Image 1 (cartoon, rainbow, N blue to C red):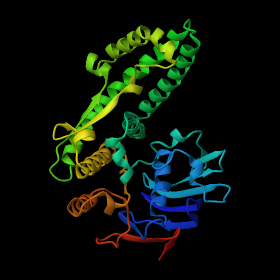
Image 2: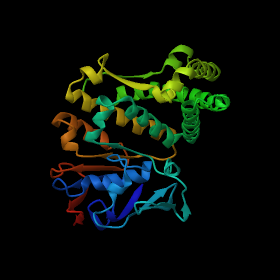
Image 3: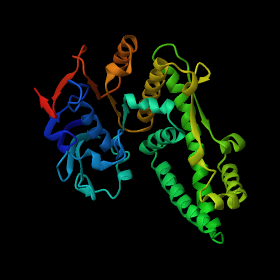
Image 4: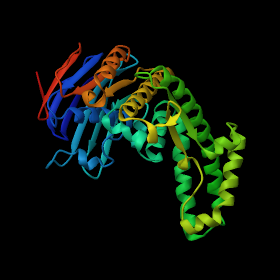
Length: 353
């Protein structure tokens, strides 16, 4: 449970401090006042990144040399702190008094989900966005997944360097590492997608029937046995080496897979209406929250950005009914609140009481 946050020179916040309710928190005010920026700061502690930009420099207040964030939270009945600062070059993260070496070290300290209008890219965007969704979800709850993901990406980087140089004498060393990690990643993703499908169907807003499929040539061909998947990937790497030398990149592996989202049996990217797309994303995020809760020793936080834009009146009302069982919730809205919650009014980067 996040108890308080302090922001300095973050986005449009020059300096601000606010405490939160352990249940529902409604952050409201006119557009461009800093509501989403507050959720962005919370999400930074959950994932190590923003849900709006990949560049930390964009988070620094205009004209300031650096931003600084600090949150006070309770976990396992113990008060703890996280501190995050960035000066444009150097990033510093402290968990209590312990420095964290990387952004990935944050994963799992706090868990949470953000539902925002930009999440429609899960439907309309490319496979990279959907793979990232799966990777972040699994990395929050399963440290071993994060280990294999880092191992796979590191080995693939080295293999691609050798492909570009056409230096194939030692390439099998990196392919062995890639195959081991790829087998684990593929099986874990496929199992998680199957679990998310069941959870998404139970969390659907409205009558839309949601179905998820993990599209992987390896899993389709070999199933979920690690030994078979490992052998499949090794064969693919060997088979395509010379073609990949011309391109300087690896053409097979879990970095090429996709998460397919279906509504009423049809691919949502092509056939779903705008309302159905929003409902799909909401169901997926609610399923993500429930999956994290079932696998971890803590209740994830749930953040909803710009709730009035994301849903029609009926779906918004249904979502509010679900919120009561979601633990600590943060919602932003440009409209006056219509339900019982701890109110936080934001005006031009300041909290107004």
